[in-house]
Length: 142
Image (tube, rainbow, N blue to C red; front, side, top):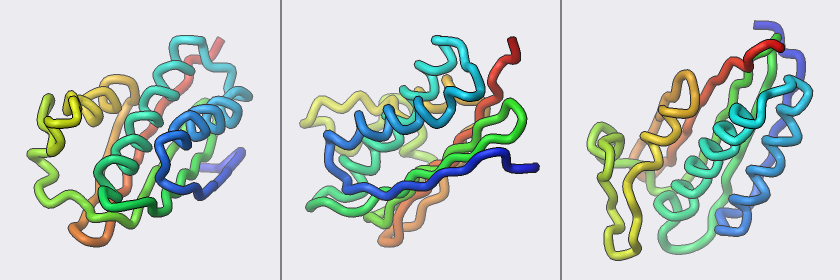
């Protein structure tokens, strides 16, 4: 895959940085000329991944989140990672409606939303080492 463009940013796992991540990924993928629907899907998937890192990756305080993206032809590749507590039981965490924070009104639909809006989603996680979310989407050529 020949990379046409690439970016990487690091930011603190603060809830207000979810909006920052959405804005950055929107600006980055605009040259691909996504439809409004595709753009909203990408922003929502990024929001879910960043929110998971903020809420679950660093439950005891702020840590660092890294977001990188690259484009090739009409394809977008996004990686969002943290060095937080990781996910002990990944298959359980991937189940719709599963949440470790029901007292905080979490729906447990983050991974399901990512899988719905992106072509493929891969989650790599190791307890006490962190989590990486890898997402790909092909933008419809117009």
